[in-house]
Length: 139
Image (cartoon, rainbow, N blue to C red; front, side, top):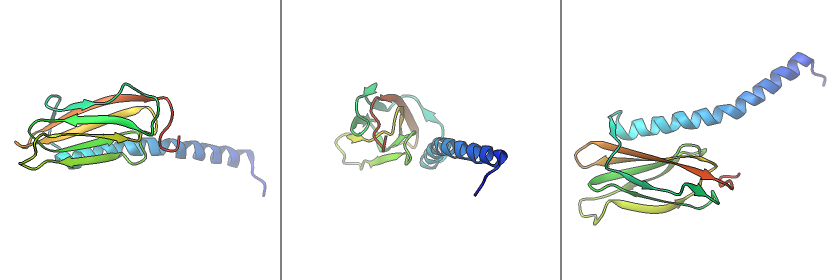
């Protein structure tokens, strides 16, 4: 099977385009997930604390913690992962504190975003950029 120069260039451009598309899709997927969680409501920059390291030596186990006094739910996303949702923590009225901590896997340097739904129906958002030196999700 022989390819002309034009066909080879077209296939190369198509392959390059396909490697870029998943990155844009995950960013819009994160925005869609946040919009679905908040119902499109405005979010405050205060009321939610997200703790994550500035630099993670290993993307396989990155410790994070979220805390939002008065929250009924906190959603955590890793915007650069192939599957952005990390988890959603729900708190009932008898919860001693509205905080959670876990270890997550990050595919590379990216933003970790947390969105909290407060008891009064408002929303708060916090994000932090984590620089990963060794890849986690297959990297």
